[in-house]
Length: 70
Image (cartoon, rainbow, N blue to C red; front, side):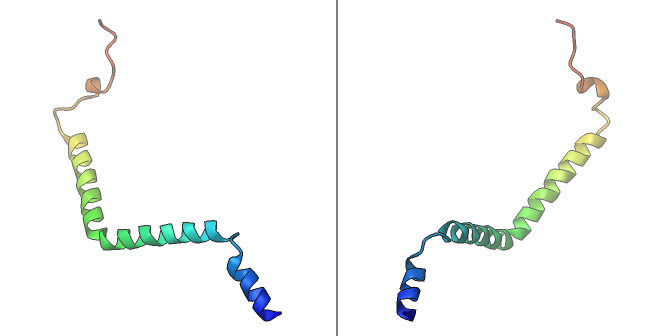
């Protein structure tokens, strides 16, 4: 009886989708931890570049607006 229940539990495939999602999330977390210094540096450079571009005196509001002249 117990052996039959264990075999039935082993052969049941209803939870495979959940297991696959958990494994994919685990791999993503491991990759994020492994490359966290590189990712943080990339994000910092991205935001500092955007900040510098926004603060640059060469850019004015007319550069952002589309012109209606042909």
